[in-house]
Image (cartoon, rainbow, N blue to C red; front, side, top):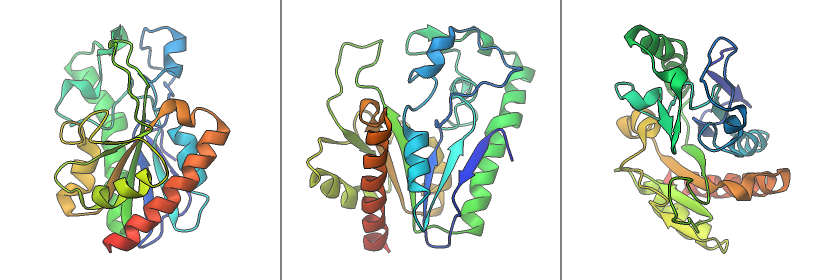
Length: 240
């Protein structure tokens, strides 16, 4: 057991691993962020719905889930270690005063959460190679700090390696979905976990962002788990 991550299901050789950096809104009892409690249920603290979608997917043969164990406000696993945003002092207009840490405090967060998370993910992928990594996130229909709506049902993100994306986008569009290619933001700008564990080693991966209102209840979570499991399997077969 680790407070930094959880593994759901049984990872299998040649299977699919669903990686969700922002699956949890947990804040350990000994960490005080200095924010209103209700913010922990909003997108700045957690990717709403992805923990449940990943758990549903991990019930299927050949699929397992690797999920972050603390809120992205405690430690953002989908950032490069050297960047200050790995322990954010603000998010979408909200200050996080408890993260105004000195060097020792910042380093302690990395040592306690960030490094165990990435070390464990690296070890899993080395020990049990996967046919496809599905990087699963969710996005809010509209940021509090912006007037711009986000109409896409799902976004597909990637950096240099677009092999899986090119296969997945038409499959998602065939479901009648509004699909964002590098939207609501570009994977070339924010792809740290997949850059490290997939692109760096040539491992096929698919970056998926589901609009959070579509997976905010059990019905939507089950529907998207079925859809993503089916499409991920199709992508894994096509890319092999």
